[in-house]
Length: 281
Picture: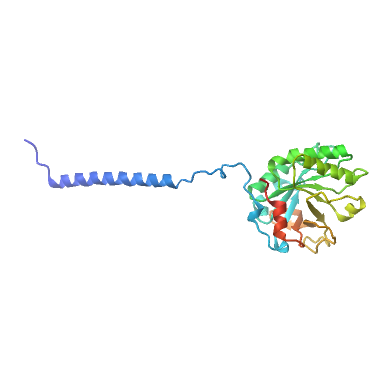
């Protein structure tokens, strides 16, 4: 004879069964929603190109902009708080090459004249969204050695996609410095570089009759009282783009002196900034 099942037990059974079904359905809905919310990587996010663009940093007043710094192996990475320093600047110009005059290894350059810390500087600043240009200290003593320096400079730099290539011309290393500087510039152009600027003092330029007409940008050092602060624009009629205004600047993130630069005050500052610091495609 079959036992009679108590109605309460039947009710509890159906309540449990119904609860299991509802719980399972709810879990399935959550899983489906989570799948829909997963952001699929776009072609741009998968790109290996550096994610920095000067266009995201608009300059409306050159005198109120964050400074641009230029650094070399003499500014050791171990002395730099890259997070803090990056928050204080608008751009960085990194020395890649100290020139063929370098005959032996030192704390800033190797025996071949390549800066020891340029790769670290470039990678650290780019990783923090700072646009980076590069420069070479020019020391060739003949047209051929100038071309050789230019090629070495390019080969060490191009993979980082710098926004500009600068020649730092400060020393007389051959009789016809104009011919040597032009040979360096032309070699870079022949290698495919379009943005080529020159850093040069006006007195040195005039003394050695160096033409800057074929360069696409001009960077002039003039310090005034060299107090660490901007004093005045360079006293020149040259159409310059960048002004190095002190060699004893101070910024949080680095406890020693820095070279500080700003865009010319004589042109549209944002237009010049985009020209010098927009990442190449």
